[in-house]
Image: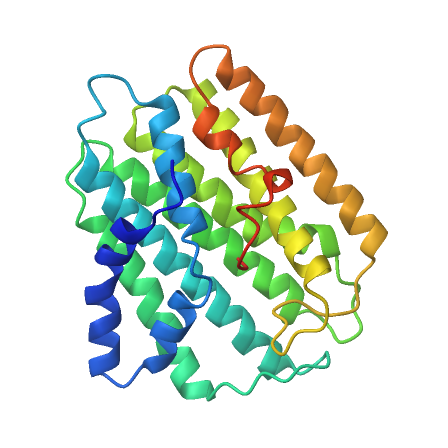
Length: 267
């Protein structure tokens, strides 16, 4: 899958325009900020890797699902920033207007489901199950991180696994589901999506240096996190090797953080 994400942007624009009309400028700002459409492209690459001749003629479904994942990504980013600000446990310079941020997050969450619901596909019910499982995992991670008792220990690797990793897994499995992949392929792609996105996000945070709006608590164990990122990447590459035994996983290998070009942006 090439780096051209204009086809995803075209799907997103009507949603963002409606948010603009309702005064929710924070929606466009949040969705446009990463600029890479990494998760939507990951979904498409997952589909391409496992699609058969019978399922390759599903461009509308893939485009809508990829846009849905990017809307959900925006929801996660905005909600995480809002929670950092509201919890106020760590130094930050985030100055979101809370009501607008809350409404914007709700809008993105709903829009993601609506966009996925526009898909005409026999596996639509399974796709909704994947997105719901992804949403549940994110909500549980936010609760553990931001709603726990004051002074409770923050599980740093788990935070990355259960936020960026969960979104990456959901994107990869959605692509596989649309492609009609079997259970073994879906499991391997879940490992690929979770592992590569977790490693990517850890490296992004560690290599970014001082930033104005950090969406994770800034006190981190760099050595421990880099080791965790490498373990996640290794697991993902092993799963890719297994996928390569029965098909072409070349497009997915381009998402390896070690390639460098896919590292931009955050979760």
